Length: 471
Image (cartoon, rainbow, N blue to C red; front, side, top):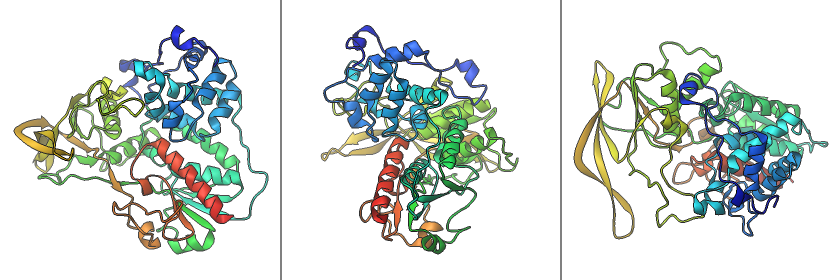
């Protein structure tokens, strides 16, 4: 422990965000950074607890007390070594992770958890700046080939780990650039794509082969993939969005959230969007259906477009400000979350179910929503009941941010014939292995849509399983 009294001397201090009036005018990252002295102080608040619940709650098992102790002592290189022992891409999670580690920090019992996420990204950015991070290709190649399909978080980390082990790895991506959800799902104002490209240059220099604009199952036959590689990892994500089936759902102006976000990320990247396909929120009344992070990203993007109004509705009740009795520390706190996008301007509404879309000349104009209440039955299960009260919302543009159902079955998965579970996800027979012995899967495609940090952990576990199989 660098400073035994750090948690007493210093309170929690966040870097905060750029001023709203400034950040809504561009797609640059909204978060600011603390100066070095302040960052060292924040790391010094770590108490090096006897039982580090932060480590317990991190899916990757990051050595959090160790890297914070190193920063407190001014040992940035040691901090990065501790961090990179478990985390391949801390520059990603340090920006976008919801930080379950902070929820379980002992200091969070007093609502003053460490700024672990910000500390993490500060360490990795310092490592890039000082040159600690550089290509380190394996000294020996093992003579076996592995194909990884999908370059999202799970695919990237699986390919990276296998390449470092000495396998010849080819990473296939159907889009024009690597990153999957990181590239075309998360807005640039949360994760600059420079951050992805910087890391990809290192992976390529280490010998990872990357093929973009290649859709396996279409451009390459599934059978050829099995013939040409000793093992295959499917990291295809859960890209089938949950739809809504009510009157008027076929009206123009109603889009899946990911279509909107992907299109804007392409604009920022400099790619042209045909006018006939353009989804743009300027001067429109926008309604986002779904209260999660994807919905929040639609709010922030709509604000940057110059929307006339932005409303976000959620079918579930408004979360409490503080932990409920059945949600104690050190578990993740299911409480009201207000993102930087919400702070930029958004009317948030809860306990509303969409009943119908109303249009004029084929274009959506209004949404009728009904109030609902959630009642617990004798078994403790929550059931939804309509109250009979309805409201009308102006809506020129609607984004469906209702989550994801499963991976896309058509194409690769169908051609391979891998077995699916009852939820439509790729089924693991044993140790990340699918029903096809040399085919493994990792990430949202097998565990369902979840956090980036959990996809990274799943990708690392799949790489270990593939290594065991090939050895």
